[in-house]
Length: 347
Image (cartoon, rainbow, N blue to C red; front, side, top):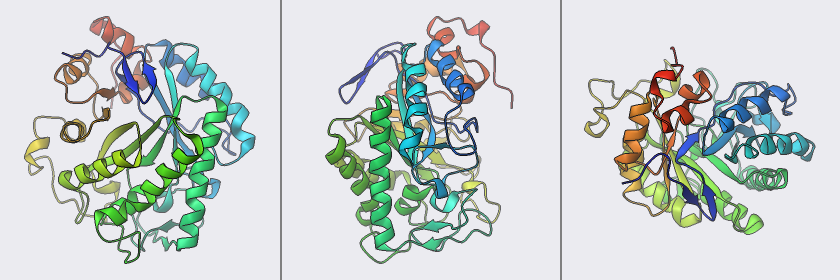
C-alpha cells in the first residue's frame, strides 16, 4: 500500500515523497518577469516544510503572452540568473524543483493581441486571432528555448502547461479548436502542437524530466470528456513525457457568458463523493490507463484526506495547493500526523 511519505521516481529523478506543490501564480516577480527575493522565500519555505516536488508557477515563454503582470518570465536568457537562485533556494531544502512553462494564448490578462487555434473566446469580449502555421512553428521553438533556460538555471525538470484553456489546452479541446488543418479535427490532430513541443524538447534536452499538465474534464459544450482525456493522456505519454498532472475545468472557465453543462447536482457519477472542483477522480481514471506517474490535484485541504488519497492509490503523487499557501509546513505536519497543528486555509 503506497504512502504519502514514500519516495517515487519521475523519469530518472528520485523525489523524496509523493507531496507536490502545484503551480500557483503569486504575482511576486518584477514587472519585467524577473525573480525577486520574496519569490525565492515563498518557494523555499514550502521546501523546508517537507514538500517532495515543487512546480514553480507558470513562466511565460513569450513575454507578450504571459498570464498577468508580475508573471515569472522564461522568455529571455537575462532571466536565467534569477531562475537559478530560485531553483537553488528550493533544492537546498530537499525538494525537487520543476518550473511550469506556458503560453497563455487566448487567456492572457496582459496581451494586446489574443491568439488561439480558432476565434473562440475563453474570456468575455476577448476574441483571439487565429494562429497561422508559421506562428505555431515559432511557438514550438519558444517552448524549447524556455525548457533549455530551465535546465541551464538548474531546475530538475519542467512542466508543460496544457490545461485551463491556455494555448496548448485550447488546441487540445474541441470547444476552442475548430481548425480544419493538421492542428484540428480528431484528437490526434488537436494534440499535434503538444506532441510536437514534447518531441522538440526531447530532441534538444534528451532525458531532462518532463511533466505535462492537462484537463481531465471540461465543463463546457464540446469540452474534453474523461474518455477523451484518457486518449489524450495516452498520446502524450507516447510522445515522451515522464509524468502527467491532471487538472480539470469545472466552473466553465470562470466566464459567465459560457454556460456549464453540469453542476454539483448533475455532475458525472465518477466525480460524485468528492468536493466540487476536485480533479482526483479524473487522475484516478487516467492512472489506470497509463504507465507513467500521475499527479492528482484539487481541493486537498485536509491531512487525513491527503494521506487517504495516496493509500487508496488514486494517484501516484498528490498536488496540495491552497493548504500549502495557508501553512508552508502542511506536508511535514501531515507526514508526522500532527494534524492539529496545521493552519487551515480559509476561503
